[in-house]
Length: 257
Ligand code: NAP
Image (cartoon, rainbow, N blue to C red; front, top):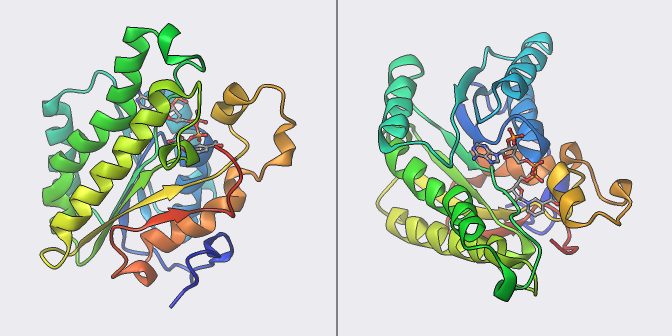
């Protein structure tokens, strides 16, 4: 049994993810990019989902030049994707890869940092759509692919403001609270009935574009890089986490975000 408070230091065996197909949203940048490279390093076939094709292609090239299994690119804007787009993705996974072993819901936007009384209605809706609703729609659509895996892991990305909200975090905090609720509902439905597990993960303060946007006055290097927090992501995608379902985990010892 692994100490769930020390997951930052988790290291899987070489090629522990070989034969596992893992879909990562927001795979072109930040934590999603690091997760894609890391999963591929441990042998996974990664499906790189994002809205900026050039960024996905750069990650694709990096995985290939590192000697990883050839990835798949899925260019999709989670704000505008249709039900049919998600169904097509599920069909392509089944046809080309056979099953889906991992789904990392990582893509999010920060929205505005301001009091709710001044918060734009449009931004509120857009943040909820990208950060929350897409997680429901994508999970629902790829359930058949996940059910075809011997065991499958869904990771929902939370935040410290998804567990205790703070002023000025607007619909980002609300979306992360709701993401925790979505995770718990799926997890309870999977419990004892399915080979699928669902958990949430708070990356904690990490050097990315989103962190710089939220904390412009901070020295970025005071926080770990995305590469340094991959232990928990690898743990949740590996078979070492089979049996862990409905947990709210942290990728690093808590700091704010
Ligand atoms: P980031 O650097 O801003 O990266 C976000 C990723 O999501 C980008 O690849 C972005 O694509 C993608 N994305 C945004 N909107 C999208 C859309 N409509 N359709 C498809 N993809 C979209 O953020 P990050 O810091 O890596 O954050 C990753 C996750 O960790 C998020 O869920 C965030 O809430 C959470 N988190 C981060 C921190 C932190 O300190 N960094 C702390 C707590 C939680 P483009 O690059 O093409 O825009």
